[in-house]
Length: 257
Image (cartoon, rainbow, N blue to C red):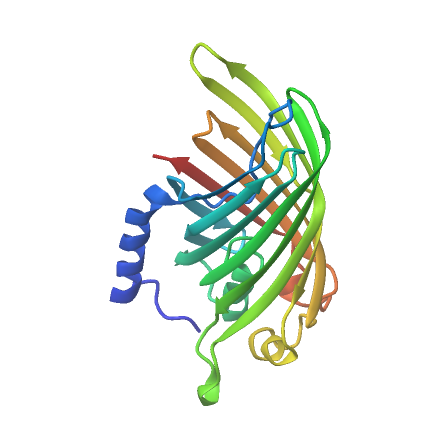
């Protein structure tokens, strides 16, 4: 089992550092863009965005995430490609099951001690208030699990991919107050690949080395400052009697200081 909920000195330092670092972070994979006209030129940016991010899941995890770096390319034709590195630390665990605690990181889109992610949007249709795109996500998570017997490694890599449809819509805008309210959704299929050894060690062989499933992401953004995202996802080829068959939800709130 995991240790008590009382944080170790290491965890306290990590949390303090993350809170201080949050003024430079943003953990949203989707970039909202309602530009109707073609860009005059393509652009490439590397930036650190000022957001504080906190999430809570139906697996009873409360966690804090940081985006260490984001690089993005916006093409004239509306194509978007971004690369981000995330890090997530659990602040509180509400259950006592080691496997479910590790499963929470697996099912968290930005979860893991380290998480490198490529995200691309291929434009399909654009207008002044809405656009639709094909969304493709590829990444690798380094997940730290519970202590293991016989000095075996307590961490493993999860290689994942998502393919779906991204729809974004501007709900309201007030030029006088420079405020806006936007909505997006991202239904998708997903795949997770890991070694058979790690599946056996951390999930008692109840998750296939190549796990597949589906998910949906719903979000609203207010004034480009507050983002609220609801994730829901499920693996479909796990043991029907296992706990890992459940539909997992996650609420994420990001605020720009």
